[in-house]
Amino acid sequence: MFIDIEALKEKFRRGDYEISLHAEKERYEEDISLDDIEAAIANGEILEDYPGDPRGASCLMLGYADRQPLHVVCGYTSTQSIRVITVYVPKPLKWVDARTRRPQGEHHA
Image (cartoon, rainbow, N blue to C red):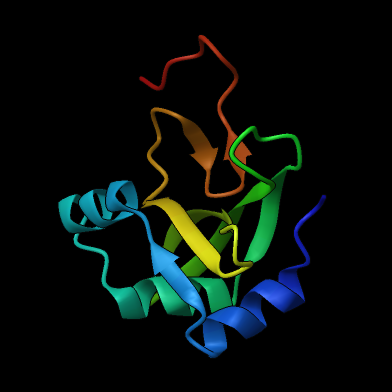
């Protein structure tokens, strides 16, 4: 199952989502607010789809909060709410830019 971005955004607008413990830890470490996550989802796009994830279909989204790029990995819970699995600011070590994953083994100088 692929994630329907409009349905996902609508669930976020209605507040039909939860934040995983991992995502909570990540957002505190990177000083990302719930408002930032909501803004990133509202203007976001799906970069990568993970329909075969063993925990359930999920996706990597790119969105912006105050011009800061954010990556949000989310999927559906068993009750079809949205679960934010993780959230982070894309870093040059792993990302060429906010949309392009750095090839495996390539290091940013």
